[in-house]
Length: 119
Image (cartoon, rainbow, N blue to C red):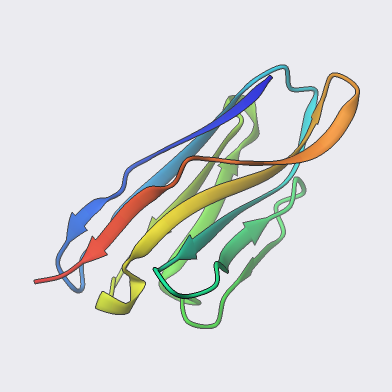
């Protein structure tokens, strides 16, 4: 069984920073792509940033230059450093990982962590 556990969300003022973490645990043989998504009520979930196991990254246009995704393969952890936060970044952020576990490859999701940007 595989679990993804996020941490690091919270309330921050506009212009502030937060760092999200997502740690994968369980019967993991290999982790491929890892990504962060976000969703606000009434809207579709959107991809924020993704990183391959080779370190290639891509970002949503709305966060490019402000957010940085990284991963520590030894810790099975992906991070999202969020700087210059704006009220429109308020959302539930969830991590996603494509994981080879025992005999299958599946997509796994974390439970989500709330990020609120407000003065």
